[in-house]
Image 1 (cartoon, one colour):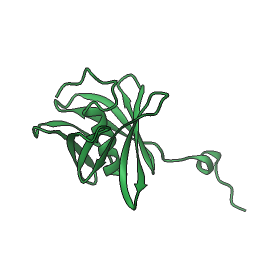
Image 2 (spheres, rainbow, N blue to C red; image 1 turned 120 degrees about the vertical axis):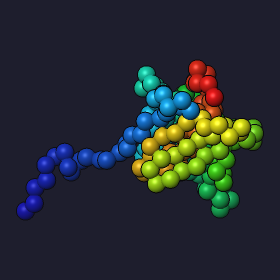
Image 3 (cartoon, rainbow, N blue to C red; image 1 turned 90 degrees about the horizontal axis):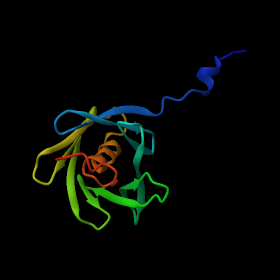
Length: 142
C-alpha cells in the first residue's frame, strides 16, 4: 500500500504566477496562469480580467474578458496582434519560452511578463492590461 501526504494528493501547481512590468520596468501587477486561461491582477491584487482560448469556425482565438461581474468581452488577439472589442488594432505581442512582450502601435514597449507556461495566452492577457482594454488601469501610461 502506498500512502501519499495529503498535500501531494490534492496539490496543484496552478496558478503559475508571473510579475507584470510596464514599459519603464516598474512592477504593476501579476499574471496567474492556468492551463486554459490567464487571470490578470493589479498591484493591489484586484482581478482586472482574463484571457482564454475560444475556437470559432475552426480558428482558435484568444479572447479578453473584463474582470467585473458582467464579464464583457474586452478584445481578442490573432496573429500577434491585439484588438479591442470594436475590431480596432491596439498593439502587438511577441513571446518566447520565458518572457512575453507587448508593444504599442508606435513600436514602443508597453511592458513585459515572465510566462514560463502558456506564454502566448499569457502575453495576450498581459497585453490587454498594458493596452488598457480591461478599463481599470487608466493610471498606466505608454
